[in-house]
Image 1 (cartoon, one colour):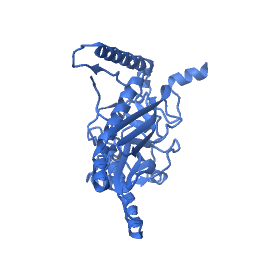
Image 2: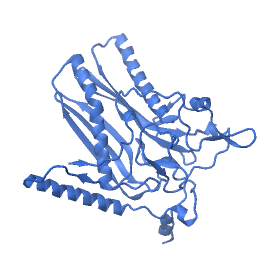
Image 3: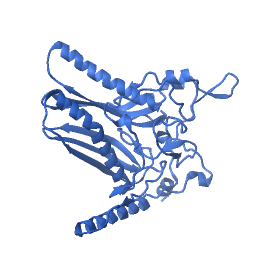
Image 4: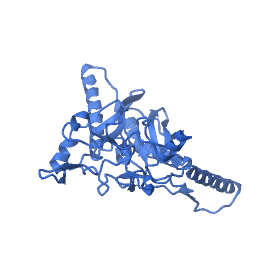
Amino acid sequence: PQPRMPSLPSPPSSWPSAGLEARGKPPAAEGDEERGEGGGSSRRTGRQRSRAVSEVALLTMGSFPQHVPVRIGGVVSARSVKLLLSSSQAAQVARDGWWSDLRGEIRAHARSLSCSAVIGYRESVSFHDELAILSASGTAVRMHLPDDFSRRRRPPPTVCTLGHTPYAPTEPPFPTRMQPCGLCGRKHVPELLLATVDRPPWLPALGEPCVIQARVCRQKKRQQGEAHAAAVSQALPFLEYDLHRQLQYKLQIQGKNALFGLRVTVDVGETLLLAVAEATGLCLPLLPPARPLSIRRNIDVLDDEDRYLVQLQRQIEAASLASAAAHAPPPSPLANGGGMQPAGAMLPQDRATQAG
């Protein structure tokens, strides 16, 4: 049986060594305007947009004050498989170059998402004999640091700014479905939000958070040297693709539409490749509600095992429907004549709770 699945949130940017290159002119962020000489607003030129994202900052910090506007573009990651054959001084210099190449790849992924920084950035390595898997990951964001405020005054960010896409809805960097924000209705948001950083305490959410974990295990042949490295390198993209697909299925079953604190671990053994991803699942009212999981069966029911699988499929679909109903979004603020709320403003249900 094959479940129907929406498009994956961040393909090649999340794949190891995908070789994604930055475009010459990154698309302008939605609402990214400047004041002209005559007082009217005009879109940034291609040179200004390129200069704005030419230097992507890699930051290990994952939280910022509310007055700093941040837009999440998505999770970016890069992996590389290397062989450790020497401990000489020249080999150590070459290893420094390995990490520099990974950081350059991360910056290229962030630029393709029209982002100016990568927050929650982490580097890790796993070993098996002489084989090493180098990993780098983070959350690509478009953010305006304090020195940008000195150039022109910006309105305070809203509680939903974090989910607004940093790229124009007409020029997404990968195939995806975008919809108007569920809180302000003025900007566009993705169908699913992934981040390696923790959820800001002021970001509204529906229901209780839950742990989402996915595990993928694949067999491999016993090999040594370059043949071993080549086999692992070729298997990693498919391993991580299956991992993201499992995460998306489990999000739909739980009725969630966002993952925060995403951690991915890849290990290699003699005959196995193992990948584990874990994060905190949340339902954000600013994003489209999670669609219930629908499972299609294209083979006949012949024996007890088939009947058990059909029953299991119905239970999964029922659990997904119940989760979707439990996370039904509240009425939109626009229905009451409201607009975008500044950061720190309470939602209607929060005000009712405080009044009680």
